[in-house]
Length: 456
Ligand code: NGQ
Ligand code: ZN
Image 1 (tube, protein in one colour):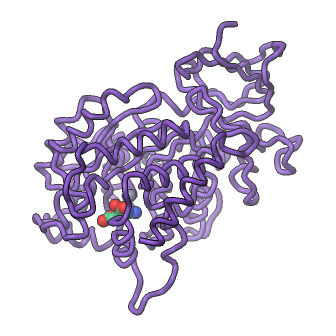
Image 2 (image 1 turned 135 degrees about the vertical axis):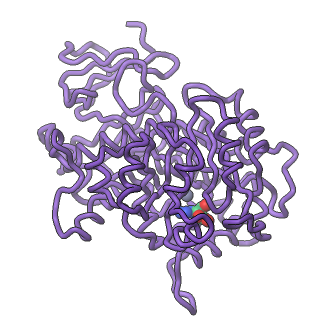
Image 3 (image 1 turned 60 degrees about the vertical axis):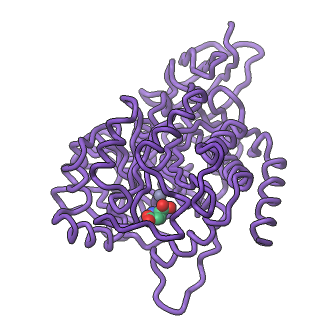
């Protein structure tokens, strides 16, 4: 055997379902070179009991990790998404390049420990706090890339187009100066990332929202980006955006977006919370991915995505941790399902005619949508895809002796212990025995960054 690494799994979740005695081998580039079921156990190869593909986190603003848990105090008036955003902006305007790198490294290590092996970073902190460009305009993007590379997580870096404060060319506010960019500047950052592109790093782009990008800019960015690269946008997250969009254009956000640009499989519509019935069908038929971020959407009081009709229409989705109040795909998927149960007063919503197991449906569909949104060969234990996998803790009471048909249900819907024991991302062990391989160093640098930010 001349593989760079190998693992023998008693049970592995392959594209066709659970298979047994699976020999997984990966090459020096970190791609799976073999996934052979019913194999004899080779001598000298590490063994595992339950192995599943690592999850894709399709929406992240890494810097917001440092704010997690710090915005949960009522103000004088009524708190909302918009009052949260004002606090978030104050924080965003204090972070230095060193600090963003330290925060992102901490976040990515936490994501890995909880089972994410890939992340899409929706990156808009482009400039210095006063709005001046850094000497290298891609400085902040490069810091994000460095944090991902050091921690071992696969990255889709999405430099953000942010030109306006609201519909009808409302000028940016002073607290939005750091974000300012036009399509050419975003494409320049994409070009600066070109030397870093490879199997662990892809570069796409993201118009921030219909509020922040004009339709001419949307089209310029979509056309200027190399073919096949992912495009993400926030859309219809808050009722206020729906109302403003109707006011400015006579259309709801998703229908307006789809009139302005050809929304297809390279698009990820983040949140897409507030959909009229006809928009549910339009979005599902487009082949785009709905980027659902259930814990953030709950935390910010966004509303509930119409999951059941969207799935019935064949819609695709993935999950993101967005503002990082959670770092766990288990929590995102659990909230996704539970939100629906609460509002519909029924059970077992996320299924289809073939897959009746909620946890299996959620894990595999979120992988497919996440992989598409990431624009990388991830999301399946399949030859030629990235060697991104999780070894679950078979000694935990939840999994000890479990049948394969029980594993994902136990993983997603029972308790809060982290059942992810070891994590391989791009053929590298990033987590061993529940700890990130550089956990202490990363935590030290994060603590130092937080001390500076508190003192500032
Ligand atoms: C963001 N976050 O860009 O970080 C946004 C808030 C906005 C979420 N929507 C800002 N969760 O949408 O204007
Ligand atoms: Zn976002």
